[in-house]
Length: 178
Figure 1 (cartoon, helix red, strand yellow):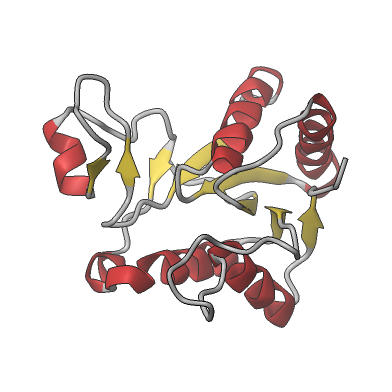
Figure 2: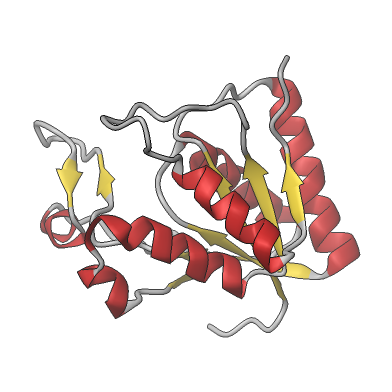
C-alpha cells in the first residue's frame, strides 16, 4: 500500500503525563498537519506511552480522514505484554509465537539491518524514521534523565531530537510542564 503523501514520525519518552490538555494539543497538531501540510503517513516506532497515545489519536482521526495511514517500524528487540504470558515477551520472533502481528497498521517496514544492530537498533530505527519524515512530533522534556545504569546514558528521545535539529526536520514538541 503505497502512499506518496508527506510523512510525520512520533518520538517521546516511555512515560508521559497524558492530560486532557496534552491529548487536545496532540489531536490539533496532527489534524493541522493533515489539513494544512498534506501529511497522510504517520510513522510509529516503539510501544512507549507516547507512541500509544499518538497511535490512538491517529486511529480516531482516520474516521474523519480515511486516507491517512499508520506505518510501523519494528525492531528486533521490541517487546510487548501479551495476555496469557507470564512476563513481557521480547523479540519479534517470540511475539510471533503468541500470534502478535502488526496488522493494525496499514504498512510495516522491517529493515533487516536493524535486526543485527543490537542495542543500537532503536537509535538506527529512529534515525531512519526521522530521515523518511517531513515533520516530527515529539514529547521531549529537556530535563528528563533516563533510568540507566551509567551516568553517561542518554535518552533515546534526546538522541533523535538532536538528530532532528541536525537534519533541520520541522519539530513540533508538545511537552509542557503543567
